[in-house]
Image (cartoon, rainbow, N blue to C red):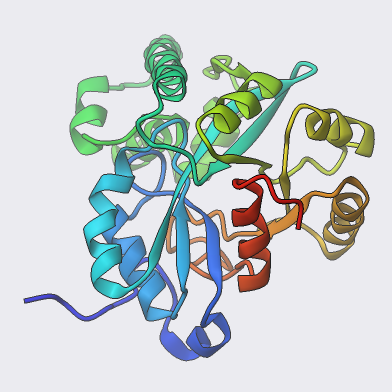
Length: 294
């Protein structure tokens, strides 16, 4: 017997009417660095009456097959999505892909390279943590997250649960942050290459959470490479930044998207559907996969 939507990874249903017909286009699960399973995020979406979601795990699409039967049951459209680790002019960027063919060979090969790079990175960071005097059993981390593409959050969570730091934020502040003594550089794809891979797979590429100092000329360079959309609303995006990004999107003919960047229920304002894209914008995004410039 199917369970009723319980919204475990979301918020209670008092906001569900405002979300009806909307789409959350940026959601992570246990298949990358999220705390909730693919099925749990689908149930949460059903609870708040979202019409569609995109599971956009980092460098992997394995959660889509798991979520698809649950999405079909609850009548939630599941959009093929992914968030690919990339770089542009030497800086870290994340490129979102939507509506692509999930069996596309070149795209799958690129994700495999990124996942292998992540595996090597985790091993190197584990070594550094041990050199710093911490106890870290990487096999125990893998057993705790058997389906995940392991990242820094999983190491931070292990350090916290084993009592070696006061919390995951403490682990990042002391060891695993971008300039921390245990941090190791990521394997990244060139952003233009990433955009082309998504395009060749029949999908549409979007820039995730643009940095506040990422200027219009840089965004224009990505648009010239085939970028079709950009996030203009998300957690941590101020009203002024969102307005500026929306203006840039209009000038460059990009579709402006909104998403919660959901990872875990304990992050305020980031429950499934907390920030969502309207149906007319979703249709504009969908149209870009068919080559129309609506």
